[in-house]
Image 1: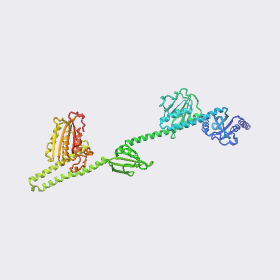
Image 2: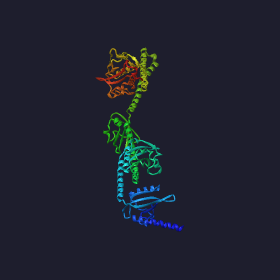
Image 3: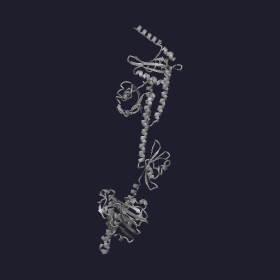
Image 4: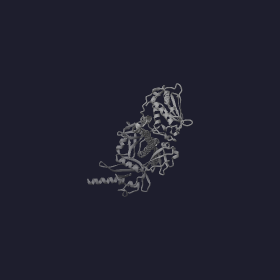
Amino acid sequence: MGDEWAGSDEIARAVLAGSPNALIALDRDQTVLVWTPAAERLFGWTADEMLGRRAPIVPGELTAEHNAVLERVRTGGQVTLQTKRLRKDGGLVDVRVDTGALVIGSSVVGYVSVYHPAEADEAARDRMARRARLVRRLTDVVGDINAELELPAVLDRIAASLTELTGADAGGFVLIEGERLRLVSTHRLPETLRGTTADLRTSLVGKLLRTGKTVLLESAGLGELVWAELYGLHSIALGLAAVGGRPYGALYALFAERRPGHLELELLELLAGHAGIAVGNAMAYQEAVRQRAHERALFDASADGIAVLDREGRVVRWNPAAAELTALPADTVLGGPPPFELPEPGEKLTFQLETGRWLDVVSAQIEETGEVVVDFRDVTKAKELEEAKDLFLATTSHELRTPITIVRGFASTLDARWDKLTDPERRSAVHTIAERSRSLGQLMDHLLLGSRAGADELPVRVGGFDLADRIQAATLGLPVLSDRHRVEVVIPEGLPRVWGDELATDIVLGQLLENAFKYSPKGGLIRVEAWPEDDTVVVVVDDEGVGIAPPDRERIFERFVQVDSGDRRRFGGVGLGLYIVRSLARAQGGDVSAHPRAGGGTRMRLVMGTESLSRSDTPMR
């Protein structure tokens, strides 16, 4: 047996030595195991030079092609390839290579390649030229795809480029969405296919994922797939696209007229890899656009003023609320410093603008950019309310202290000296106590009505009544109250009846008349006039007093507000009278407002609806 085996080895060596075609055997690491004399003649290296080392015969630009061939051989089958190889003298030789697996037992331990010198040199040059053109075109296509930033456009460009580069008859791009696939882009396929979904596990993409590879060529069982819409479909090549290292989708190249080769698969794999990068860029861009739009919406819609300052403290962003609060439009502020001082980060600064508006300002620095974000809000109302409350407390204390002091003084006098006082003296003291008690009661009524008005709980019971009678009753005794004032009442015959609360209207008229007397200390004419106007009745109370400055004609109707105009602060009160007047007027469906009077003084204008209006048309509280 030993002699027989020895004879077999000699025969095998003789066969290899006599083979007209170069035969090279490699192990799994591509180290040369066999290098025949024909290989020496074809490539110029001797067996002694090659055995035990890697053969330097594969050009650099064909390395990916060579590795792809070995990978296919390792997983089964034989591959024939028309390509080029390097010679020892640096020249290129056109060859056809038949490569199969080197199998010992049941294990693949290497590769066996037989090299045939190419007789069709022109065809080989054409193929290499085509490959070079496609590789250059791939570079251009990748640049075009990456220039797109909208995801749908990116996907459409990828599908169109796929058919151009691989020669496929149609193409498409599918997204992996959990356990489903969705066709999002097609080229040379019916538009009705767009949006089609399929189960990932039973799809070709699922099969490709299970192989662990990035490219798959399938030629069997295609009739049941949605791609069968392409007439004559015989082969499908898939390339996996990954974003951030995770499978995102796959490119489908569909062939009906021609067969895909190694070059087409290589181009598909390269395009799929670049597609993942382009899709990732488009997704990042879209997310940035969405984030920026969200930030812009918040920035523009914020009720707070917001400014962004650069490292040099110049304003680079100024939202609409900032322009409104400061009365400074963005174009006058951008590029310069903010129109107010900045607090230290984490602190709050309250200050008043030249317009009189009070602002609370806070700021924070963005560490990554060095920018400063400034937030400021209008606290004028709160500031005024705080000051008004302080004034209210001081005024109320004064208004209460004076009558209480007088009542207590006269009561003590009566208690201690009753028998020593004459009857007229006792009556005078009791009268004073009664008058001051009435003032205290009126003050308490104002405070109670003010609190109820603030809670929208004013008790009004509307109905029809004669407003002319109420005006006559309110003004009946006024001429004898002051020898410095003249009272004139002008009411036309047939003044329409109004719809409202009779008692509340008495309070409103009484307060308006009291103010007319109070705020015209030097006397003059107090004129009350009423007239019908559309479906309302208008009542005006005119005086020739100190008047009201234009900015204060609305503020006087707020709680606790007493406008400081000349010597008006000496008239006393707690700043609730006109607040109660407007609240009662509006509770009846009417209103009251303040206006300047020609020649000086003030006109208070009360409007009430007529009885002819439907009750359902009257706002009720």
